[in-house]
Image (cartoon, rainbow, N blue to C red; front, side):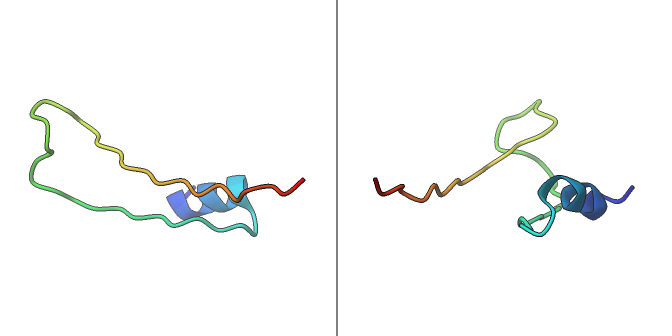
Length: 46
C-alpha cells in the first residue's frame, strides 16, 4: 500500500498535506526521524 493510499484510508475525503524529504542530516545528531507539526483547531461557538 502506498503512503498516499494509507493516508486516504485514514483521512478519507479530508486530505492532509504529505511531504517526504531526503536530508543529509538532522538538527540533532543521532536521531533517525525528525517530525515538525502544526495543528489549527477551529474555535467552537456556543
